Structures are given as C-alpha cells and as structure tokens.
Length: 171
Image (cartoon, rainbow, N blue to C red):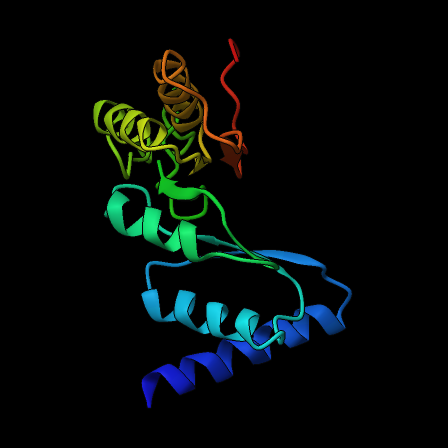
C-alpha cells in the first residue's frame, strides 16, 4: 500500500512540475521507495520529465551502484547529496566570522575531516557530490573537500555546490 501511495504522490508532483513547464528535476531522497516509484513510472513510459535521483552522501555505495545501473531513459542517477551546514535564518549556516548579534558561528552538519573522507569515498566509487553549503565557512569546507579528492578519477558528473550564500574571500 505504501509503495502505491508513494507512486501516486511522486507522479502527482512530477505532473504538476511538468504542467508548469519544468523539464527536469532533482529528487533528493533517502527513501528507496521513491526510486522504485520513479523507476516504475519510467518503465511504463509515464515519467513526465527528466529526473535525477540523488540519495544522501555517506550511504551504501554498493546499493547506489545497483540503483545507478537500473536508471534508464528519463530517470538518471544524479549526485550524492551532502549537507555541510544549515541556514542563515536559524543561525546554523557555518560562517568564518561570528554572527553580528553574537549568535556564534553556526555549525557544520558534517565536520570538514568527515566531509573530506565522504567526498573521497564517493568519488573513488565513481559518484559525484552535490554539497549544500550556505555559510562562507561551509563553502570553504565544501571546496576543500572537492579539492582533496582531485587526485582520484573524476566521475561522469562534476561536483556541485548548492546554496552558497556566503563565499569566502579567497574562493
């Protein structure tokens, strides 16, 4: 029952996007049933737009390889999504200088050393990353992590930085 509900929801949302003129979308999801729903829609020729399925960074790379091998047509395996920090509104964006109101420097969702290890592991496995990094300290950590994996073979997709609202001066 859950899988048919997920398929209904995914299909409805994608149809709404397609009707609005959207031609491609990333689905950032840790829920395997969403991949199955997308794969089923594609197999029946009902996927209304191009979809990149993007599971979380730090997950099971063997599973991800199997999913990547199953992706066909309008369904592609995208990037591994990693969250480096939070958001400015909640003061969880990791920043180099303290917030003006004394709210600290935010926080890393993934400490830089762990982020470096995960990005290297992903790239060694043939996967590109999409890194959510809002604050300038998080953007620096994301750039450093990608640079730390530069000696490894490059995956088919380039790494992505997402939401970089604060960019360090040396970037």
